[in-house]
Amino acid sequence: MTNTPPVRPSLNAAEEPLPRQPRREDEESEDDWDGDCEPTPCDDGPGGDNVQVPGGEDADEDVDLFADAEERNNPKITEKDTTDPQICQPCDNSRIPKSITSPIRPSAEAIEQHFVAGHVDYRNWCPVCVMAKGKEDPHPRSKEDDDDDRTGLPIVSMDYNELNEDSAKPQKIIVGKDEVTGNVFAHNVIAKGLVDDWISKRVVRDLEEFGRSDIILKTDGEPAIKAVQNRVQSLRQGRTVPRTPPAYNPQSNGPCEKAVQDVTAQLRAIKIGLEYRMKSKVHDDAPILQWALEHAVFVLNKLNVTKEDGMTPHERMTGRKWRRPMVEFAELVLAKLALRRREKGKAKKQKRKLAHRCVEAIWVGQVARTGEHIVVLDNGDAVKCRTIKRVPVEQRWDPERALLIKATPRCPAPTGKHPERIESRVVDDVEADVAGVRRHEPQDEPQDRLQDPVPREGNHDARDFRITAEVLEKYGYSDNCDGCMHKATGLEKRLHTPQCRRRLSEAMLEDERDRSYVDAARRRKEAEQKLSTDERERTRRSTTPRFLNVSTSPVRRWTTWKS
Image (cartoon, rainbow, N blue to C red; front, side):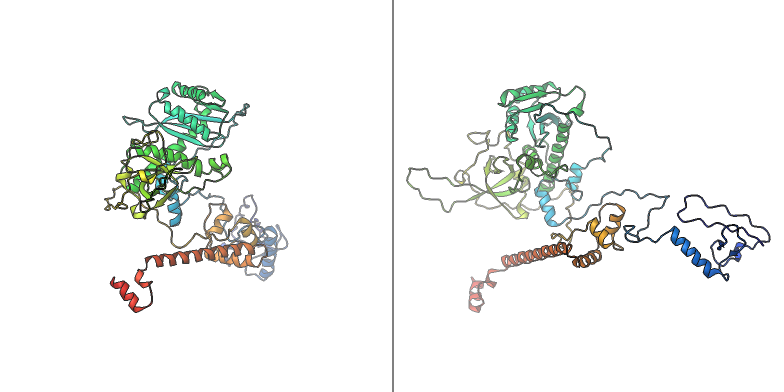
């Protein structure tokens, strides 16, 4: 019986396998084969008369031949040839979908710092940021070359914007941006055009704080904003070159449009965060929102890091970071005011050594030039001070004081001699509240109240050694580790398992160069653990009753307890 041996295709062959020859009646059925494999050829090759089948007398030799051929056609994959041999490669008939980033729980300290910073950085785990700054997915587009500015002067663009167009009294603001440093300014507007001359003078002062002498002031073709442009040009001492983009071409003023979006989103985040803290609704025409607009611009200039160079507009302008401390917007603080100084040549008067040094006030921002805090007192005036003290968390939010203030950036001191100025005030002129910090009964929370961000458990402040692609290529990938699997396949980052970190740390300790990274991570953890132990000890001492720390003498303890 002569059979035509079928050709076994290689695993890497791109062409389709040859069709199976039709079976004649005198041939044996495929059910007679011992196994599921096809008939295999022997050394005679295709067309030979000797066909070996599994279970035959030459089966062992034939299996060895196939093993050699298979090894030549499909060599074994080593760790040097692939990133992870344990990961199944995608099949030809399927695609790995692009997943959406999942929020990761932050630490309690990270939540506190994020709220203090006024939600300036978008965080997907923060409900305030998601509701205030959540955007649609970007539309991919090609990058167009910008027109070269042959004048060499920095460009400052500005435009109007309405916050609530549907309202009976729409709130108008003017927004400007320095296109070189990224600094922005924004102020509330009473009316467009030259009716509100305070805006023109304030823009001139903003440009002085930006350190600009000769600039190009760019606006659109609206007559009201062009009138402000001409007014600013006449008030400034430096050279001001007016520029207007072509009509019906808003893309020409793109940086200012982006500044309007950033300022509006930041103001919206501060407003939602204020409602979250106060547990009450904040109306759009409330005076405190005018301070919120100034604070939104402040945090964008001082704290907002851009992706291009990793710097803030303030760092790009001055070359140094903003290091002045701040608290959350509209927080109740204790403002430390100065004492009245004795003038030279007069007799020394008796000092008021028992007078109050701090007064209660609402924190509404900082002065960019001096770094002083701006607080609103109970009499309604906004004053400047250098030092503030925080109160306990349970007493930081007072809706009665915060939402009913009357001072505004235009008129910060309604009861003062100069209502248009924010001046420093001495404690002698301020009536101190001797009753202490007010305590309010807990209010009923609204039904649509946002949920508190839940901090993750454990101490995760001390950073461990970084697992980079070079480390994984050098020491190999770990099995059953999401971090290794996502790193090998190019997916989004995932945390490595403790077993993976333990394996890599043991391997890195044997290397002289990589040992330093593991030792540095160990020192950071030990320092953090020591700091946490000291903090717990200080907390224990501060909360322990005094009679337990006075003395070990029974008589002394009994006397203290009786008193």
